[in-house]
Length: 111
Length: 113
Image (cartoon, rainbow over all chains, first blue to last red; front, side, top):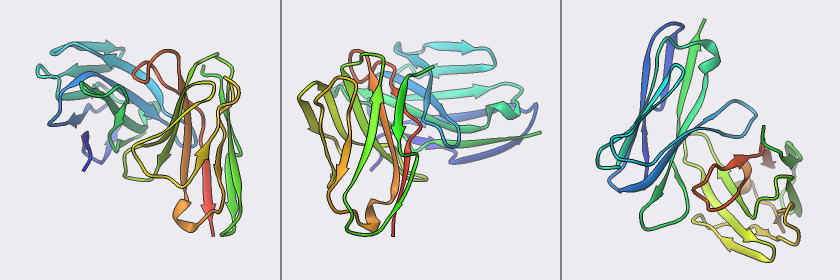
């Protein structure tokens, strides 16, 4: 059983459209991270959220941590082909010091 | 840009062979990790190290072994490869605890025939 469930598994949109991917759990996390992984490369950290209800913006990317610290979302505005990749969420459970990763959402932005 | 390297990038070998996947980082990080990544599945932690001479097994049972003789080097060894070991292996490091930013290498794509 996965600790972190990501949805959707795949997402294909046209350039200029908006998209949202979700990361959900029944467990509480001390912090949650989002990574992006491009083909043939390792994941690269985008953001870390630590406070329930926290919203962080990174240019066209908006990250939200749920009030109960059990879920998170990533919203991309006006997606570009360069946003294509596998988006992974990773959380630090409150009873563990190791990260747990979700299975990822594969995003494809068509030009 | 992360300074963490993995070799080889791709490896195709026959069943029963012994292999070592190399991972090196030049950031001086104490914490290093090996993950296994398969399509549609979450990254599974198979080994980690909190410093020289420290190694621990991760959450996913693995037949591989690791060593940490030097801070910058964290190789993973399979004594006898099997087709079930076919996967993407990612090495990562972090400065303080595992929940800090993890810097990943590009991965080794292993295929065992």
